[in-house]
Image (tube, rainbow, N blue to C red):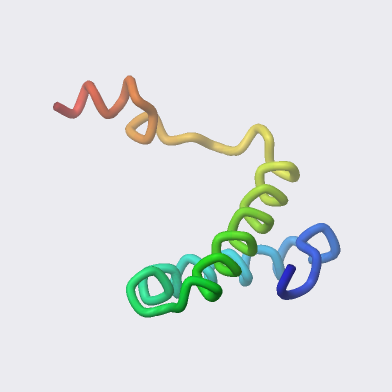
Length: 73
């Protein structure tokens, strides 16, 4: 794993890491090597998993659910 174990990050550090990895995702997908993309996938999964572990009851916008998406159509 690359970077600090997500479980060891405080909440503000975790959010900063998530913002950074989401911001760099597109370029990594388009221009990164297979190894870079694999590392990015692993890191993103770890960070997102930690966020979800800490926030199991996070706010989910109605429009971001399958039912909500169908209502938009």
